[in-house]
Length: 209
Ligand SMILES: N[C@@H](CCC(=O)N[C@@H](CS)C(=O)NCC(=O)O)C(=O)O
Image 1: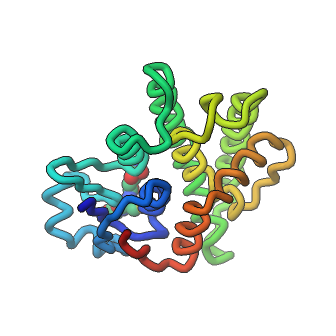
Image 2: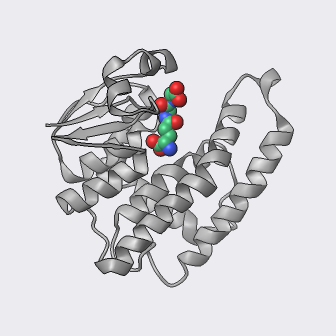
Image 3: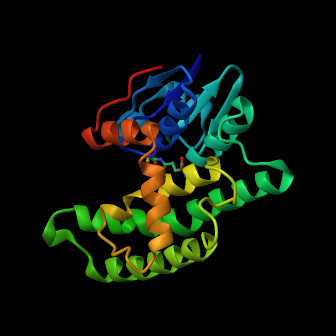
C-alpha cells in the first residue's frame, strides 16, 4: 500500500491529485503543521529534510511533490509523457515549476492571504512581476497546443498546474495570458483535481483510496 506523509493544504495535495487521477489506493499519514512534521520520527527516518509530502511505495521512498508525481507516472503508467524526449520535457517543466514559480507564488500567497497590517507590498510587487514573466513563458509554450507536451494531458501539465493553481487566489489578472488561463482552467476542471482541491480548501485530510 502506498503511504503519503503530509496533509492538504500543504504541498501534499499535488500528490493526492496524481493518486486520484490513477485511482491508486493509498494511506495518508496526516501531518498538518510544521510542529507535526518536525515531531514525526518515522518521517525523519524516511526523509532527512523532514518535509512533506514524502511517499513510501514498498521499499521505494521518494520526496519532493513533483518528483513523487514523476515516479508515480512512470511506475503506474499514469498520465505518461511519450518517449525519451517527452520524459525529459516532463522533468524540465517540473523543475521549472519548482524553481521558477513555487517561490514567488508562495511569497505572494503568504502576503496576500495574511492579515492586512502584515502585508509586504514590496515583496508582493516583486513576486507579481516575476509571476507575470512566468505566465508569459507558459503562454508562449501553449501556442498552437492544448497541453505542454503537445499531445494529451500528462504529468507535466499536472505538475505545472498544481504549482500555478494558486494564481487564482493571489488575484493576478490572467486576461493577458488567455492560453495559460484556459489551460489551467481545463486542468483544474478534471474530476480528480476538483475533488482534491475541494478537500485542500477545507483543510481536511483526503480519504485513503
Ligand atoms: N519542494 C518540496 C517542498 C516541501 C516543503 O517545503 N514542504 C513543507 C510543507 S508544504 C514542509 O514540509 N515544511 C516543514 C518544514 O520545512 O519544517 C516539495 O515540493 O515537496
